[in-house]
Image 1 (cartoon, rainbow over the protein chains, first blue to last red):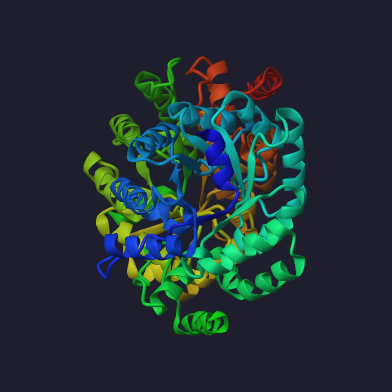
Image 2: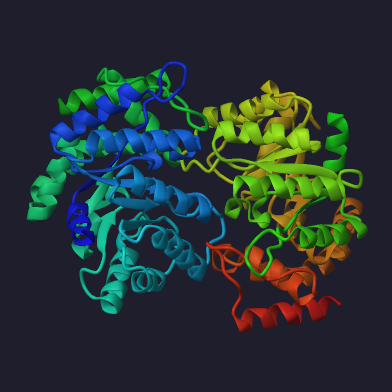
Length: 302
Length: 302
């Protein structure tokens, strides 16, 4: 079972968007149809309640609902890796809910606590992993202050820790982390996922990445899947051509400290007629100029 | 009323620690006695559910309890500025709870959402402020991506927005923010609080800070209050002597990306016999060497 999860993770890990209706409430039919379109295109790993899902803007009930909708649409077509987070008790409780809802794995958000120690980081993730021993656990590493030794230690104490969503923009540190964990726990103990999406995937690939997360896949799943294929086959020219094609979209998302990371995705989905562009504070809709840039990019890939 | 809150904020804004018992549960008697000792020493502004309170490690029920304990001990002796946060609906609901519990003000944590836009930041804070028009609202600014114009805009649309807890470690940007808001909204419209505690307070003072946050005050309230007095009177030599005295303690807290920010405070309180050193993941207790450093520092100031 855990080996199945690991095998499945070597893919495009799409973070689902959470469409809202005009009143700002979760739009369940919109959620289903956006997700179904990507599954039809071949997406086979989905994470509800990730950052692109506006996880931190959803109430607890809405997070449960997003998980439920995802499992209903995707459970027999894709690996569902449910995002869980907040304080350690809430995260463990959310993990149990994910199991009960039918998810096969969880993605543990980096603790929102602004202070993280290496030992505390391990304890946090171990407690969450221990709550669902039958589920695969992926950690989401965003802090440069968590040393590779903490990953190795978690691999030692938590048998169901199966993967790392690595999101520190430092490929050298990433390669070092893979090396340290491989040396301590054995090659292949963990699956390494580039947590910085398509922009960074080619740079994490040479030292161990076998999958990458994606928000873009909500919009153009085939682009993300083609990038994955070129990386898997070592088609450098093909990968670079795709990278250049998708980069302007990812640049729009990354500008101003990623202010529009989700907004740009929802704008594109709105222009494609798939859901409203509505987002919740602390993010906001694109101004007209930004909307035009998204339109230009969509034209460039269609 | 709001003017009273503003006047009171020009002080040491102590963030309360949340003592745990040996089983890791919130220790109410410990909470009360640690807090009472600081009030006895003259602390007159307290924030429960701040970062030093391990806000992000507490469950919703525990956050309510910490607020309740604080109001019971401090309401007639100090200004209570209750920390609120998470998604916008939860933050607004927590603000109403703070009002109902008897707090006079709230401190809105920077939204945990990893993506912030200027307009979204304003909308988020406005929604929370609108939920409690009779309470003073202090925002907690940690991101360098929120422009000063967003602060001015919030001051325009939210009459009860009274102060900024500024925690970007850049005094030039701080001075610029004060200037922009003063120009747009009038001098004195907002109270500016150095949100980076004693270490940074002297550097924020020349351009507008009139108070500072403190975790140290849980341990040595008199040191923090003396620093405040020297800053208010312009006693540069006195301030620098105090700064040099407290700096080693704050350095222990700041090391390794602030991994031990809270841990060091609780370690000192434990050595003083005031509460257990227990913290919750994702942070962890100090190793023996760190405990000795805290002991040495306590000796140096007693």
